[in-house]
Amino acid sequence: VSNPAAPSEAGFFYELEQATDVAVVGNYAYVADGDSGLHIINVSNPAAPMEVGFHDTASEAHGVVVFGDYAYLADWDAGLQIVDVSDPAAPTEAGVHPTSWRACRPTV
Image (tube, rainbow, N blue to C red):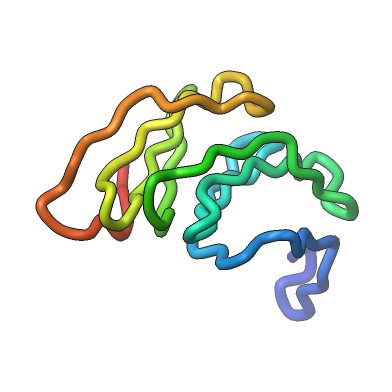
């Protein structure tokens, strides 16, 4: 988007199933990918993005917000999933909070 009047594709990552949300922090894109969970993509080279980490979730990841070392995932029927992403190559579950209804989109 260096020229907003004529945006152009710099690169792509097509190995996702149903990307529903993305949060970009530094060199990483954190993608909520429906039934496929959380994918962490290194975007430091926009022409060649590369997946570096993955975390499967219990339900369908619909939204993601990253704050500090944690990704907060709205995981549909499973509620709020909190994932430690301090090591993007090895994300781990840090906590779960059930919700009274389907979780769609976390906000900070």
